[in-house]
Length: 165
Image 1 (tube, rainbow, N blue to C red):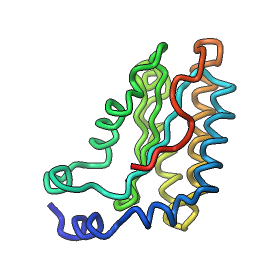
Image 2: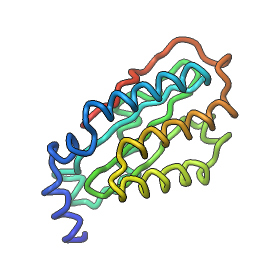
Image 3: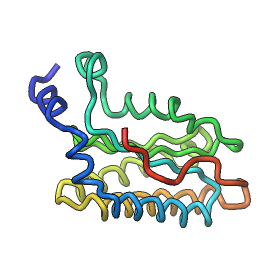
């Protein structure tokens, strides 16, 4: 367990989330999700968490492990066509993770998700939370448009509004 990571998590608060993800930024992300879902068959959910606390932090839970947990907790896996995608931001670690249902993941692959995460993290490092978030959602949308066309899914099953945890 790294002491510096624990300190970052203890001192990264909801205030930091609100500073990085203003209501205007959340509106832009929501609009990007809505626009993207009009052209592909995926169901995209965007979640931001300030930090880990308690047991997950002390046990060294990674951003990836937390994203997988949230994929289940937010029921993103429970879409009619198994078309869910989670974009997860753990602000204390400046980490971005993308978790996708098996069918989508099989088409797109880990390398594509990793590229998107890396670019978002780069923009976040420069303070571009709005730009990085919207660009990430658009990149996910482009992959879904290529591999999971709109005709494969029906109604919007997941909220488009980003969730702040």
